[in-house]
Length: 290
Image 1 (cartoon, rainbow, N blue to C red):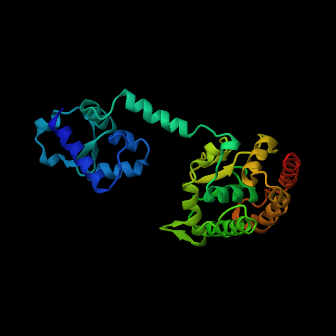
Image 2: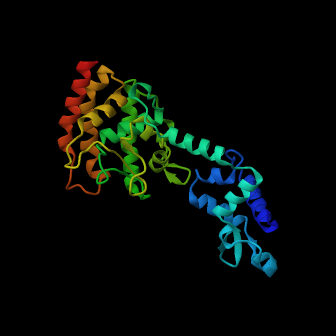
Image 3: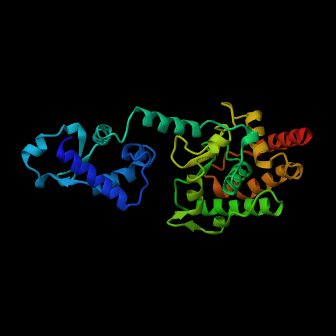
């Protein structure tokens, strides 16, 4: 393998080690297949070599598809360059690729409701989405803006958390007490990190919408009516079939929605009041079945 490619790869590996990023299958390529692009670009930038330090012979010795050119005439390995180097060194092969992507796919396979175990945070998020009737991209948890609306969402989450704790449906989620987690609004941070909810709810929970950081429950049909089976599934997961929870759910959702509707949604001309009867009837049906 070309010496310049080896240097670029060694620089990248050192940068990743300094950042204490754990490699998957001992492969940079596979590790960054699972991470945000900005994080990878940051590592590539730190691993660059200046073209000014190289001879023309060295520059001409490598295929241009194996590197990216950064500003100020610096180069790093490209995605193809990383893959080909690791393939040549035996860090990556067809078996590792298959196992890696098979595991990623497997983690997204929906679970049956009877096998669904929600974490404290997941149950709080799902309950808050239901109570606020975040049922579409038009009325959803919009965490794309770091503004006071997210503080209103946090206030809503606090009330939902209190309700769940007081009625013995969930443990207290400590971080909901904070306005911010690190540099992020608390709700932005929470919603970013519930990426397993779609697989636990038969993909009904949308955590990666067509618009970044827009989160909702996909329980409406094309004409805006409720898909009763999908909503029933969510209510069953949230309540775990608990009779007291099912009896109180409709009133609780109405109270939350009426209090926060104008504070959390920009489009207040459109409302989801009509869905109250759907929540009430489905809760009653589940109560009878329990």
